[in-house]
Image 1 (cartoon, one colour):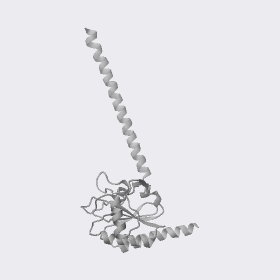
Image 2 (cartoon, rainbow, N blue to C red):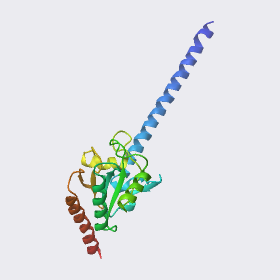
Image 3 (spheres, one colour):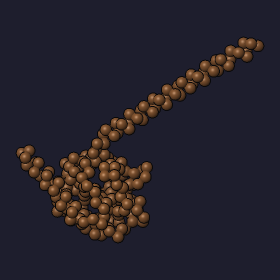
Image 4 (cartoon, rainbow, N blue to C red):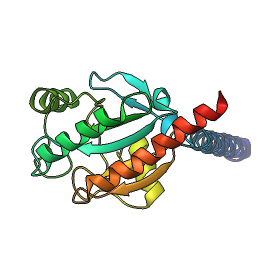
Length: 210
C-alpha cells in the first residue's frame, strides 16, 4: 500500500515539473524570437523608402523604386470638400516638377467620415477620370489605430502628428526622411517652393558628380 500510495505521486510531480520547464523554455524562446523579429524590422525600416505597400491591385510594391526622388505623400479622398482643388493642385505640381526627380504618392483613407469608400482602385479611377491625375495611387490604408499602415506610420511618427482630415501632405527627401508636413488648408505655393528647392539640390548634386 505504501508503494501504491507514495511513488506514483512523486512520478506525477516530476512529470508536472518537466512539463512546466518545457512550457517556460518555449515561452522564453518565442519571446526572444518575437523581440529579434521586431528589432530586425525596425532596423530595416530606417526611412520611408525601405517599406513595402500594396498597390491598387493588392500587389506588394517596394517604395525603394522612389528612392532618389523627392516625394509628396498625401492621404487623399474622393468626396471631401477639398477634393477638387487638391487634386488639381497636386497634378499641377506633379507635372511641373517632372517625374524624374519628383512624384506625388496618393494613399486613399476611409477613416475620415464618408469622404472615401470602396477600394483603392475605385479612388484611383475616380481621380484619373475626373481630374486627369497621373501620379501613383496605392491601396486603401488606415492611418489611425493599431492597424495603421506601417509606411504611413513612419511619416506620422517622424513629425509627431497624425492627420486629422484628408489631404495632409508629407514632403519626403530623396533619402526617405520626412522634411516637412502641411495641413490641407495650408498654401500649395509654400509646398511648391520647398519641393522645388529639394529637387534643385538633387539636380546640383548630380551635376557635381559628373
